[in-house]
Image 1 (cartoon, rainbow, N blue to C red):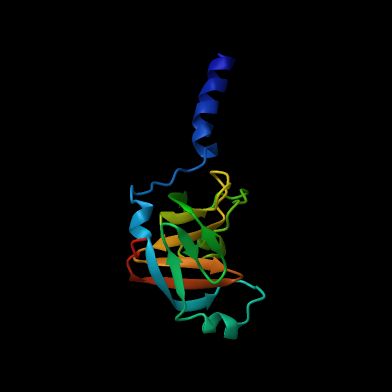
Image 2 (tube, helix red, strand yellow):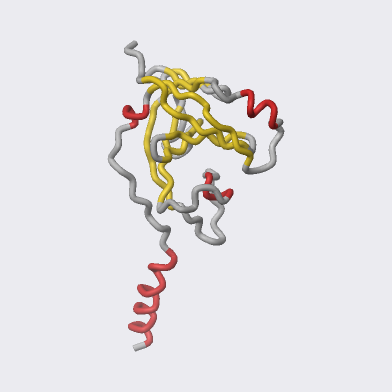
Length: 159
């Protein structure tokens, strides 16, 4: 009887211990390739970037292309792209390896956070060199306490 009770309690509480799974669309990373314009810069946390420097970035381009990803903060040759989704709510007591916008209290109205992960040659499968959050028709680039909102201005060039 004691064993049966122990098994029942283990099964009951195992649902509370498991990490929540986030559902992600089967969208292809290729659908996100193109040139993006920085439309807005909003401070969400402390950092070394001044407001003036962040605001000066408005109007600059970010290129996410088959053979190269170029942002003001990173440039990756021959990138590998992957779309992943993470639960929007962080589990209490668990420190996420990658701090997404929800960690800072931004975009909490989502069920999951869709991320375009950018891998450089040699990166492990679970450690991208760079990432963008995909929010509706925009990309969010979080860097040094600033959230940069990017909108697509053109489709990728055939190279």
